[in-house]
Length: 569
Image (cartoon, rainbow, N blue to C red):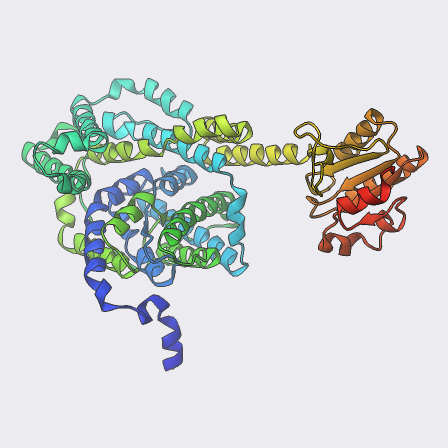
């Protein structure tokens, strides 16, 4: 029994140094206080009562702190998972908040199960298949949708829909329901948030020293929250038509069995849960791996999958909705001095205290303040800089960005992500289908060979040397064959064709068949095909196949050996 208990204690706790305790406690307190408004807002964004944002920042955060891969990552409600939750559960919006909350817990449970299973199967490598363009385009599109969706809280207009067109159309239809006081409160809060975010140094410098400006910027949303609650309570905004949070359940999240759907309901939620799992893992692992490198720590992607999965599974039983790692939350955690996951456990205690002691204080809080908080925070996720860089360096990745971005705006989150991934994979296939095949010559006096169009090299009339700069597979074999034949027509006197295979790491069956056919075709023209620089693992695959046994020429260890053996003297 003691050995079992010992295994349940994480390494960071067994090796904990008391010298880290003061900074961990301070960081946990700071993060806990600062993310209260954010957590409330993300619950609203997910279509849930604000208190569920605090619920989602308790049990899942504690489980990740215990089992996650990162010492400093702060997980919790996130913008993208919140809006994906709202999008997935849109059909249940009219079935009552109790049913909706149960479905949100089910979604967290499904997402967590997918992540945990992926971790057990060691699928952490899958994150490398989402390009920077696709992820940035998806998040940027989601940010625009989130921004637009929050207009209903700033205006009082009942905006609905799954895409930008739906949001704008419903806004036009119900524009007559605009509530002036709500608009005034929301726009004022949004302007103040934007000034604090983008002009904080100018805003605070006249009152505070430079060392306190950063803390003033971080505390401002909380201060604004308190001022709004005070004004709403004293001026009785709720009686004037301003939507407020109202009754907040007292106490901690309770153990609740998730809703058990029928087969077709589960099947309809599964694609969304899978995409959310992918996005949650990519965002969380990006944050965790970045800080692991900065802190000279190891990062285990499969452990991240398991930790994040178990956090969501646990949250599914304690009134949570899907959670993920957060960039801003983790940055505050690190900058506040966090050394270990104990900081996240302190943050959990702050959330517990907020629910037990301060829940009633949130009753007069206008939804317009939460909407303004989200809108001001989400603008920073619209990643125009990445689009500009991709356009300058890699137009195909820029196309993937735009495909995901436009797809999200028009068709919604799930379809938009799929469109972005399809364009990204199509770009990869297109690039692979057109491998670079260079005619090379020898650099005088050396054993090096370079492209004849880029360097001053020596060529030989009876030799045609071609370097294939890609592995051979069914998607590019025909292109390589065509390039070799065209080169032989340009150099008709070359009787010896040497394929330099230094960049070829694999040849599939179609590629092998192409080489066999090419060898016979050249032989019919009284030309001989030889290979140079075949890597050992590749040679192990093709050594006893007709690619080698039927070769009209020879296989040379290096290109210089082939040249010395075959050139005219």
